[in-house]
Image (tube, rainbow, N blue to C red; front, side, top):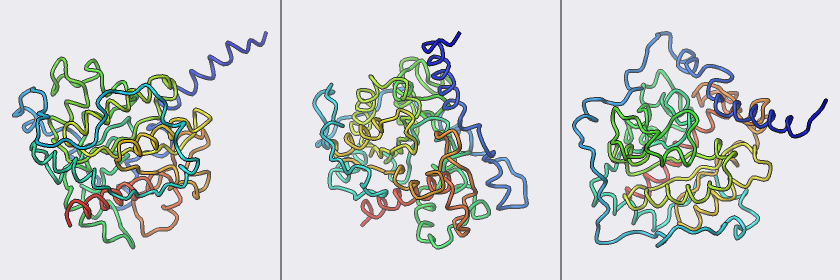
Length: 329
C-alpha cells in the first residue's frame, strides 16, 4: 500500500545520498589532467605538508589588533533573506571589493596571515581533484585561453590551489566545519574545529567558502552557523568569500538568499556562482539537478565552458583576481 510519509522519507534519504556522493558522480576528475597531458602523474601536493604542519603548535589564533573590521557584536537570530532585494539573482558573478574587505586584509597582516595564501572551506567539491587543483600542477594541466591575465593570480597564490584543506571534506556542512569531532586529529587539537585548524595551519588571507549543498537538510541552523564561520574568519583577519550554490535542492533558493544577504550585511565578497551557470545547458547541472557537469580546465575550448566545473574554476580565479588587484594596488 502506498504510504506518502514513507515515500517522503525514502525520497529524502535518496537526495541526501545524492548530495553526499555527488563528487563521485559523473566523469572522474582525474580525466581533466589526462586530457591535457600524455603523462600519468599523481600530484604530490594533494596531501597536507606534514613537516610544515608538525612545526606548528596547537594554539588558538590571535585576534588582538588595533582595529577590527566590520563585525556584529553578537550572533543574530533574525533571517536577513527577508530584507534582501528581490534582484539578488542579478548580483554580479564577480564582486566589487569594498574598503571593509581591505580592512579585514590589513587586520590579517597584523596577525601574521600570509598575503599570498587562501583556504577552501566546503565539502568534497572543494577538494583539489575537483576544485582548482590543476592550477598548481603546471601548464600541462590547464589552458587559460583568452584568460591569460589570470596567470599572475595562479603564480601569486601558488601552493594553495592543490593543497588539501582541513576544512573541506565530503559531507561537510556549516555545522561540520565548526565541530571539533570532525577535525583531522593528525593535525588538529582535540578541541579545535576543522575551520580553526585550517586557519591556524594555513594562515590564509582569503577563504573561499562553498558551503550550502549539505545544509539543505539543516535549514533551521544554516544562517546561524554561517554567521559563526563569517565572524571567526573576520576575527582572524581572513576575508570570507561566500559562494552561491548552483542548484535549488531546497526548492525556494533560500540558502542562496541567506548567503547573499549575509554577504551584504557583513560587506564581504559574494561570488555569485549560481548566476554564472544559468546560461549553461541545464544550468550546468547533471540530470539529478544537484551536481554540476564536468569538463577539463581547458578554457580555450568553448565546449568546456558549457560545463559547470570549468566555469566554477574560472570564476573562482576571477574572484581571486579581483581581490588581488584591490589588495595589491
